[in-house]
Length: 312
Image 1 (cartoon, helix red, strand yellow):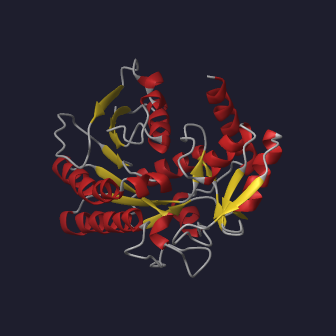
Image 2 (image 1 turned 30 degrees about the vertical axis):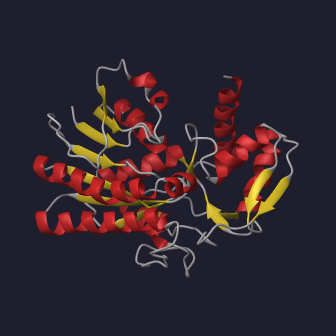
């Protein structure tokens, strides 16, 4: 039985990775400090004999007496509200935390994956974004704590690969949504759903014409696991290439929820990207991967999750 450590394992993406790896026959160690992760995301796994949870901040030294085969480093402060509130913690987990976890991977001689982000492309001047695009990032803006920590994390990962021969992977995650997202965390999908279910105004920043592409969580997990098992070390985009405006997203959610909410507009935050769309040709070629879940189907499942949360 292979053993995988997942940092940030109680978070939105991390908890889904825990589920999938356990179902695939892995032993899973989940590590999280619960700053943005939630214990309820993994509560259904506590009695599983192949699952264990360690509450720990990866920016501190990691002492783990377990034989590992894989490390998936998904610990991160990833939502706009959170990394504006916790800029130093955001920087530390992406840099010091990544360095610590890479040190553990080196000591154990195991495969390592760094969860990077489409935010390394900043406010891109090309669309869609290919992996060989170096980005357009403001290094001193309010978003820089997140953007630059991820860029540094990628550099650290490649340095350990080149100098120490660690089998590393870098996944650049584009906008992902699904059950277990945190409501009111500043990201469009949970914000719009929460507002629509409560019949409160849908808040759109700017004119709503800025675009994003939305990948359902099961599609993302499938891409991550395919990359995890491949001998490929350079960054690779995982996301849905179907692009739509934020205003279009809001209207789809209003339609599915049959909400009485009205749309209101507020000023666009600093350095908010105007476009975001992955070029996934590399993922198709190297991983034989592409998303399969239709946006409306994925949103319907996500809305069901938030509806149950409202009832509780």
